[in-house]
Amino acid sequence: MENSSATRPLRQKVIGILGGMSNQATGEYYRMLNERLNGALGGWDNGEIVIVSVNFGNIEYFVRRNLWDDARAYLAEKVDRLERAGADVIGCVSNTMHRVVGPIMAGRATPFIHIADPTAEAIRKVGIRRVGLLGTLPVMESEELRLRFQERFGIEILAPSDAEKKVVDRIIFDELVRRDLRAESRAEYLRVVAALQAEGAQGVVLGCTEIFLLIRQSDLPGFPVFDTTALHVEALASFALS
Image (cartoon, rainbow, N blue to C red):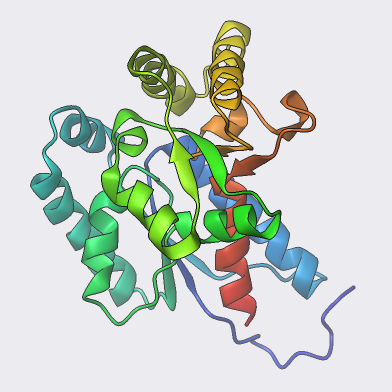
């Protein structure tokens, strides 16, 4: 329905997106945010969104070499740009880079929605307390992330075996960030999820914002799948509509 009663221009909160990690995830954020906001606002209305998209080559270089201080300095300047552009809330499209973006945002006044928080809230809402986690190596090995889920939400995180972590990470960097979607890689991911389920996981977190391109809830009937991309988008859209 058209929002014909609104005073024009319609005043909205501006969503700031720190993107480019990867461009595939960033494009999906933009599409999904506008679909969600149009569904709420109706007519021709959608979101007011500012995107600062970084060079993924820099991110890959920093992550592979554990150059987290360099990554933080690089992304802090990009956050500056979002704030200068008038963002009312900021979201980072990469689970991995929350390792540095979280601390960057901790010292700033602009609201920041951490991707783990709406994910954990969704997990708690369905009443489970133990979930498997897929993501890049830094995400799957993150003690900080494990503690965030445990201490803030009472959720235990299970990570794949060391060998399986390498498989999951390789598929993300070599395939998913290029939108190279392979049936054999889907089968590998589903095998890893089955192993996590056998260890006691009651659901699985897609802890990389490209993984939903490869597997989703329909691939795992009866086993809860928590897509960080969709949950983060919903949280950002809800903030903008509040």
